Image 1 (tube, one colour):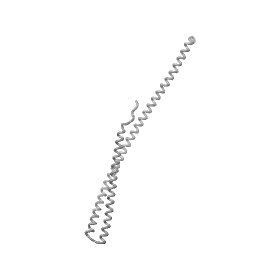
Image 2: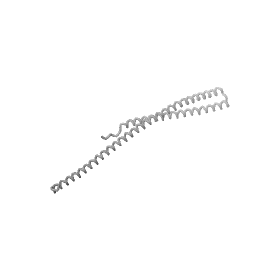
Image 3: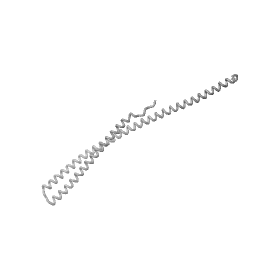
Image 4: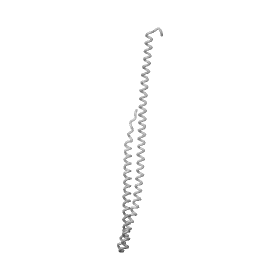
Length: 170
């Protein structure tokens, strides 16, 4: 009996593809978060540098201790923000790396299912070809038997005719 085409893995393949898509989306979000945080950090560093330059100019031009002190306090605040962004970037990069690993695992699982489907389809095709060859061989054997039977019956008819025509020669 011929097998049915393998369809039981199609749903599993769709699930694995969906999981891979979700992992890819999570990785993209993690990478966007890293990029945004890096941009924020760069903005803080630029602001800190500009603040230091302005504080230096004010210290040389018109020295007001309270004003310069507030600039340097704000600069220290920006330095703390930079450190916090650095720590946050380390965490976000670790998350992005974990998401990349999850994506690689999801891709491996999908490829395994695809290979399994490929093997099942190959086995189905091989079984179908084997069944087709069996039927072709059976048909050829039947035609050969019919041909042999036809020749045998023709030979028996010819022998009977010979017996009926010349009964004494046998």
